Amino acid sequence: MPVVAIVGRPNVGKSTLFNALTRTRDALVADTPGVTRDRIYGRAELDGRTVILVDTGGLDEAGGEVELGAQAQTRLAIDEADLVLFLTDARAGVVPVEHEIASDLRNRGKAVIQVVNKTDGLDPDMALAEAAELGLGDIFPIAASHRRGLEQLGHAVVERLPEPEDSSVPDDDGLRLALIGRPNAGKSTLLNRLLGEERALATPVAGTTRDPIHATIERDGVRYHLIDTAGIRRRRGSQEGIERFSTIKALQSMEQARIVCLVCDVVEGITEQDARLAGHVIEAGRGLVIALNKWDALDKDRRRAVLVEVAERLDFARFAPVVTISALHGSGLGELTDAIEHVQAAGEQELSTGALTRVLRDAVEAHPPPSVQRKTPKLRYAHGGGHFPTRIVIHGNRAKGIPDQYQRYLVNCFRKHFRLTGIPVRLVFREGD
Ligand code: GDP
Ligand code: GDP
Image (cartoon, rainbow, N blue to C red):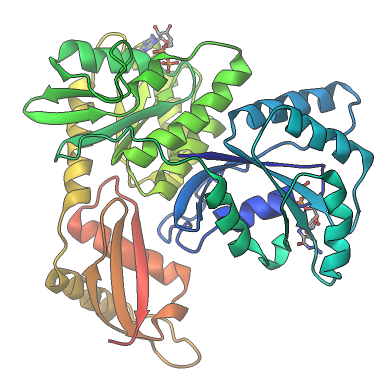
């Protein structure tokens, strides 16, 4: 998955653009209020292609320590990006530091699209004329807060991205598993456990014999494709580098996976970063299993405290199974793989129209939906609409106005009936028959 970084001075509208591009209607999951969102990394669908969007700290005149730190982060994000969106503010005009940023981007030979924001209510020619001084080529006028110009921008981004690389996972009925987690959570220890204990069947893909991108193992008759094993092993450098690298890697690997195991380091406790990663998995619609690693290192009181942290911080992911393991000692691995296989089976289920419609009718009978514009919505029938995430398409009248709370109720009914453990569920409403 390509990486696109949004760069620009503070206040030009970077976060607004980031939110506008990442917050698609489908992205917010009806059954998961309070999904922890990442304000820096997001997944965006641009013109049919999925990209990782990075909102950088903002480049400004060099000053105190803090600004320098923020700039170092931004530089790193620029280095990792396939394409940079350089955002300026039509109202503020072009300021000297933006000339510096522009020449810096040119010197690095980065693919750049210049984007002029806040063009709402302005004469577009005027707005563009001043921005053209920066000499970065094509300029796209947008109004991020009005969602204006975003479609054309998305199209331009996709046109300039490198062709997708083929590092595809074998397309068989194997279980595609990605391990993600903070640095030091124990991912590579767990990976080696999984690889070492079991016979490695094959280590194919992309001609890297030393460091395979994916690895295939068989465990109790189940074939596992472990996604991006190279990314898990290869991770040395500065702490900052690792942190950024691992989030981008995590986003990229969960794209190819069906099931994601979030490895948490219980010695450190459940952190914001763990919650953000869980939020990413849910948004990507993948099956989620939470592994509480280093369980061996905790006494009874700490263990209890960690379980409370899980309940509080990962509350929005409470449909995901939680397994305690010690990758170091190899304990809990059977429970972990059982949970993974369980989630896979739940996500693969073919949900028949008859069964879905029965659950829908029972749910509506027990609690009718609240009226929309003084009329009661009629929910007629439901059918399956895809896996990972499990999509359920509901047909009816005035179905589109159904409030989130009632959607969550429906999701819970479906979840309970079909035992959709660990599987994010999306409802799609269709008007009419
Ligand atoms: P950042 O610091 O670059 O991330 O900028 P923000 O996204 O926080 O936006 C800074 C301010 O500009 C906020 O008050 C936004 O509401 C405003 N803003 C963002 N986009 C637009 C736009 O398209 N038009 C107008 N008029 N204001 C905008
Ligand atoms: P990664 O960065 O997520 O790949 O983490 P590593 O697998 O490199 O592990 C980081 C550190 O945690 C290493 O020192 C491991 O030995 C240690 N570690 C991993 N799993 C466990 C565990 O289950 N228990 C304990 N006590 N330490 C562990």
